[in-house]
Amino acid sequence: MPRPLVLQPDRLLPSDPTTRAIARELYGQVAGLPIVSPHGHTDPSWFSGNAAFGNATELLLLPDHYLFRMLYSQGVPLETLGIGGGGADPRAAWRIFAEHYHLFRGTPSRIWLDWVFAEVFGMKFRLEAGTSDFYFDTITEALATEAFLPRALFDRFGIEVIATTESPLDSLDHHRAIQESEWPGRVITAYRPDPVVDPEFQGFQENLRHFSDLTGEDCLSWQGYLAGHRKRRAFFARMGATSTDHGHPTAATANLPPSEAESLFRKVSSGDFTAAEAERFRAQMLTEMAAMSIDDGLVMQLHPGSFRNHNAGLFARFGRDKGADIPMPTEYVHALKPLLDRFGNEPGLAMILFTLDESTYARELAPLAGHYPCLKLGPAWWFHDSPEGMRRFRRMTTETAGFYNTVGFNDDTRAFLSIPARHDLARRIDCGFLAELVAEHRLEDWEAAELAEDLAYGFVKRAYRL
Image (cartoon, rainbow, N blue to C red; front, side, top):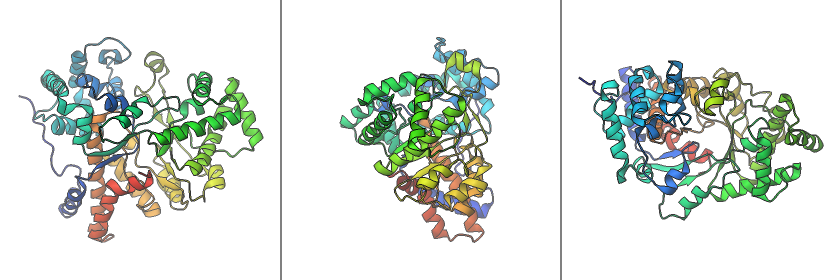
């Protein structure tokens, strides 16, 4: 007999009865607020073309590197899931996923997916080997209907705005098509310059040549390269962007004299550079991007500290984003000082800091954001986008940075259907944290109610200038 799938109404709220009652009331006030998703990796072509998603595997399994990493860790070959063009049958891949679904017990992936199964598709029984085909057929049949087209789901989920993330080399044709359509949904882009900022990014020199073609600037010269960025940033802003995003290995910044910066660019653009010179160039470019942000108003996001594609063999076989990215220790106080020495007191700069190194929350990030007007803390990110990770973030940053130097929640996901589940989880955790402060008489109930709405909705709109 299949096991029932039941979403408990008080899930993730504090277990203490008094605190839970407060959290329940707070959550009831914010549960239905619109979703603002200012940073993510959904595909804009979903919303421009509004074509039906193909099947359960294509939509829920293949875009999700959280799932790959767990399955691979337990010996499931990625080829059997259809990764890397192996030609695996989608139903067979879904069966493998269902047979291993127990691996996700206690993980946020389980929380998100169970929400999707129950709330979006109305499933009454848990996913397991015996229900695999029923799940696959039910989900795939639903996806073929108008109610499950991308735009219909966008509206159903109550999404007010969603930002995708594109390279400067992207034409943004899908964003243009969305803007020119009669559909009122707001899908914007964000400027992610890594392919033309990171000398160690695959194809960097060829990317610079393409950058020149797109911008009409000589992007193999330092001044032409900077002009190219300004042009593309302006184009992205016209297409709705309010932010940039920088996925650097470290938080290092630099403030080199112009002649030294130009000399460094000549080295990296020629392909003749050391790893240290690549790092110094990335560091300089964060400061250059800050200067541009003061001019054009785009909010900077810095996502450092991931050792990308740690599994070299897996990367060679399957490429990027297959679950082998690993967090690293990350230092911020000295790393950000060159940029902050130059721009830290500029009222026009807004920079949101993220980390994969939780040891920096109380020691570095909260004090920095608690002092510099240009800095705010992004939410618990990636490996820490979880109930315990969100609680740790609040406990380690609130007393120093307060709530008002944070930016609410962003889901940072490729998995479209998990977006409302992720926001629901964040709202429940924040309401639980606020309820503790009320129960301990550290906040009044009306203050907690105001904060709950800001954490769910207000902060993110203000921080991202939406």
